[in-house]
Image (cartoon, rainbow, N blue to C red; front, side, top):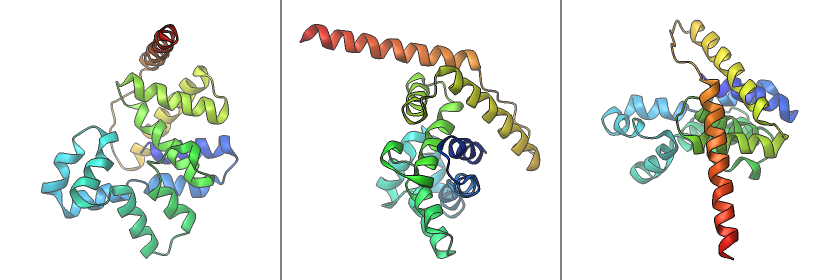
Length: 193
């Protein structure tokens, strides 16, 4: 529920088609559903681990991951190549990609950071947005709050009751903590030279 609105917002920042980006974000985790439905005994224990490790664990177990599986199915449905490629490459470093692939990879990074307690993941998402769009911390927090609103609105469509909220202050603390850790590490490295 987070990827599609994240892709739409990132697409608007990038000046890229929002409709295709929304569709790619919406379908990005189709492979997760396929794995969970067809191989629940093998797959569901994997899904309970850290989401960032999921694609690697899938690769080890199945020889391919949910992004590749979802993209393969989308190709069999003859959906546009840019949409299929965006789904397939959602776990790639965003700044190495272009167009809708770029948008979905950033949306993936942002979406996985919104609901986490991992400061490094939040900092990484904020840094990617800063590098790609010169988005400052306040812009990042505004984006997070707008995504929370979109997720809750989308949940209503599916008759889901999502109680989770994004803690703006916690996100800010995580960004500051990671930034301080990074600065401290740089200072230590610099003093050793």
